[in-house]
Length: 315
Image (cartoon, rainbow, N blue to C red):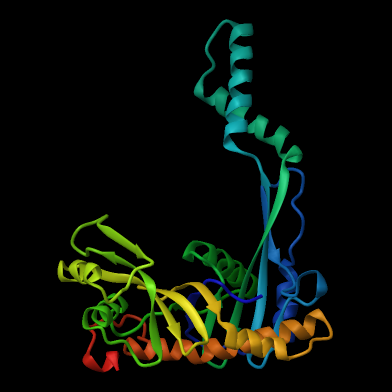
């Protein structure tokens, strides 16, 4: 259940549905298996998995939801091979070349024939609404996957006023100053990896791993004008993560101190274990995220631009 990657969004209006009300709304799009001729289906599943029946799971004012996608695996190479064989057979039998439209229709027929025989794969995508802070947090490595859940949530609820989270100061500019000056905020420790990008030269990227980020090798790149667009950090011995310049967090890891707190609570069943872990996770993120936003000047209102980092952002 512990989230590994965060895509962050800001609710532009208060979220006022209770967990029970949200469950009732999600029921209209409960997940279901693919039909024989369906390439994929997308719907809501219990966050607790097989141990649960409810489509929401709440701790305090945080409500977890889970989107389940089921799709039939029909590799394009398999379709191409089958279509190629049939085209060859038909052209040999008729003594003429098939036209583009005929080949397209043949391909459609092949797909319809093969779909029911295709293997089925399912994937789950979790997110939670933090009604107190006005956030939607999606456990996704990419915005594209997160948008799939958001689109489903909008279709289910009718509307969902939110926008990607933005801050007042450039995260890349602030992180670059941190490394260039060798001064990070006191509650953050640098990890051993970063990604540097030249803002004036497309494709000029330097990825550094297992290096001293305060060393001369990194400084040479910074002096050449490259900016930090990804930076490994550790916060208060609680959470390690890679912070990206789009404010997404990658490879999130809750460290021993938090895992020990979770282990101290004896859970009689899966629901109780989920409650404990969810409460710890949402509580820690509820403290970490505002701290990060503050380092970048705070959350920007829609349409606000980004400014250069100030000395205060480095404190």
